[in-house]
Length: 165
Image (cartoon, rainbow, N blue to C red; front, side, top):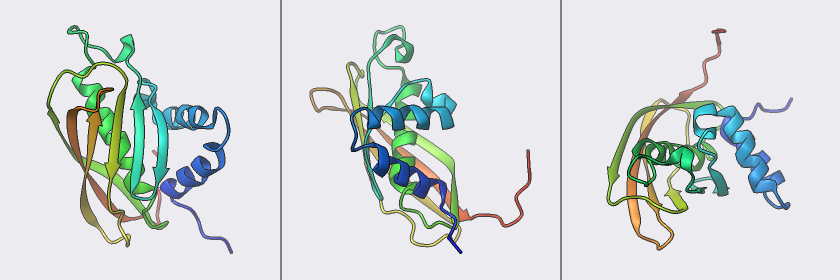
């Protein structure tokens, strides 16, 4: 009998299978964007994932800009959420699930150019219900931190009785 993988484990398996090939990171990023449509609309590019660590780039393009010719505040928040989720959920136990319950973001300066979001976290070791705050830092091309986001994930056991919605 094979164990059922969590969404994070499935993502990590897919990443490990695709990322080593030319175009694999791009393909993984498109698939993740298809699974998470709102995040996918920004077209982030996943550069690295391992349990407890993720790096995601956000190219500067019109679709993520505001009227001040910088990256929109909500695009930065979404980038932080996505990065913390990848870092945390890829290391979570297979019998767990997570949902975002809080997102805080601090903006340090206008964000322009391709951005790099980086997160180091300690994934949960059990599926016991717990709140897990995880921080991502977002840097511009010069290496300056333009924003810091903290996502609080509610991690808990997968319900045995799933309902269709």
